[in-house]
Image (cartoon, rainbow, N blue to C red):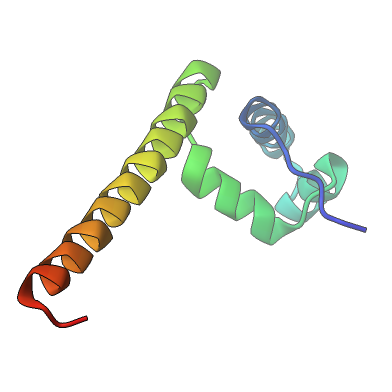
Length: 92
């Protein structure tokens, strides 16, 4: 069964839920069981999304997608440039 892909809004909500449980004296393990994720996932989420608001996370994800698109465009153009340079030298 494939793993569930959580949306950033869901992650922020679950992190807040864990913070509440920890503030009430619960353990991290109990809180992670309650939100149905592993402790490793919780710590990874906290590292990436800790302290961010929902709109900030959404903006960050949009920027990451745009950055990926631009990197691909640059790599395609660089490859085209190298091919044209080789062709100009006559080194087919």
